[in-house]
Image (cartoon, rainbow, N blue to C red; front, side):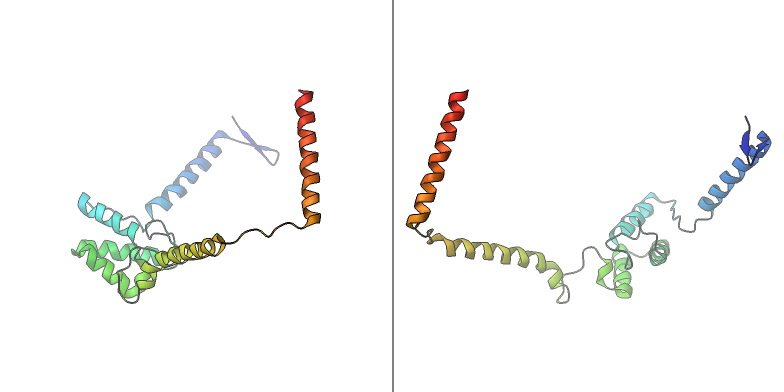
Amino acid sequence: MAVIARGRVAPPRALMLALVATVLVVLAGVVCADDLHHFDDPALQSRYDALTETLRCPKCQNQAIGDSGSPIAGDMRRYVDRALRRGDSDDDIRDAMAERFGDYVLYRPPLEWRTVALWAGPGVVVLLGLLAIAAVIRSRRGEQAPALDENERQRLETLLSRHDRLDNQDRSDQ
């Protein structure tokens, strides 16, 4: 089977060479990837995976460093790799990342005076919303709708009688 390109037929050998070249280029990208971190010890591998999923990329919005393609996330993954191979604990690694990049990189920042707003903020917003709803309900509890004047009462009676007449007519048509 030959492919026609610019009025000429490409021989099968040329197609095979093009296919092989494409496969080699794709494989070269996979082999040359510098971000592959594999450990012989399954415990270290699971610790690496857990850490890269629980540390946030400072450049990306709410994306773990394990999922991010940014250069800073790659640097952070390499640091985690080296620290695990050195024998650092998970807490030491998290502390080093937080010291360098701030508590933002931790999905669960420590409860300190600086992070109280992060922890208490959602609860305070919900509480304020409930208080606002309670205040509105309490203020409307004793209110009654104002009485209708004579014109409004006549208009209401006209509309209700028209509705009753149409409703009775619909029932009789069935």
